[in-house]
Image (cartoon, rainbow, N blue to C red; front, side, top):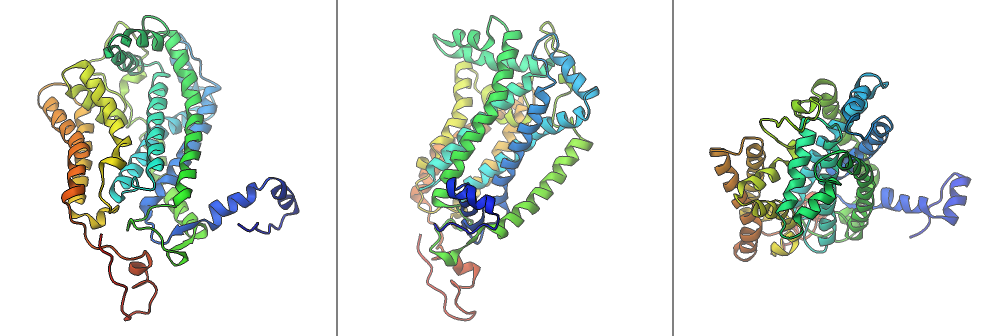
Length: 418
């Protein structure tokens, strides 16, 4: 890679000794990107932007928060009432968690639809699932910090799940609590980990980007680029596209922050934590509801815990469960239908997870759980064998430029069989 000529002598002096500007120019400016990426590819950069917002607002909130069971709730109220723009910072952070999960879930389902987990991007996908797990741990610990009713009882219920592990379960729960109940040591260690884990996420995101740039982005056609005719520089084409997506996203984000800041939360969390009063219905934040539904769908406690964690673990195995040589659902007519059934199933599990564990809600949660695991463990391997994909173009340029760049009316290249 030839070193770019920078106008600033200071930049040239630094870059000659530490080529960070050359690196950034190559990775963020000249980086060859498939020319047919749609707006569904905006959600990776959106996730990075929200992560930065969450870290900045979290640091500011940490300056005013008191991690003690006698003062945590009051310190949050002080942030809302007395700190300059504290209400805004907290609402951005609180709703930012939901926005983060919305963006990452869409990013994940886009990867499922277009086969972005397939070779040679298996490690890229695995790192993405690791980021999702770290997000869940960070969000759970952050939800405990306001020390409201849902914070306290959510921590009690979720940490108690580990007691189902044979032999060592009770010891793990005691270690998590720092004692024999959810109390001040629990709050302190959750606060410390909630502050630390976002920086761990940043580290994994860097690895995720390195893995992404190793083989480049997947694309809606799911075929590899054949050369310069299939790619364009990342800047300005996709930086402008990303900026437009960010503007639309920020409008939606601001709508929640200013007009419906508590819409995605639970009102019981504005009641101080009381170990002697159990809420009528304990529910986690909405982004945990599908997994909460899976947990409650299994009558056995250990089975429920294994199913809940298995719902995430199965994503690690996805590159080897789906053996079809075709990536994109555009050319997989049967898989496309099952994909949308999976989306509907996840919506069903989210809805069932928010309802009381009784009657029809339990039945629907069990049906949803059964299909979720059947989709990955049964349907995908079978489709890899029996599905007949549609023909794919020979290159990205063929559909984009009417036949690989040949003049209109000229004979296009033959279609490649899957």
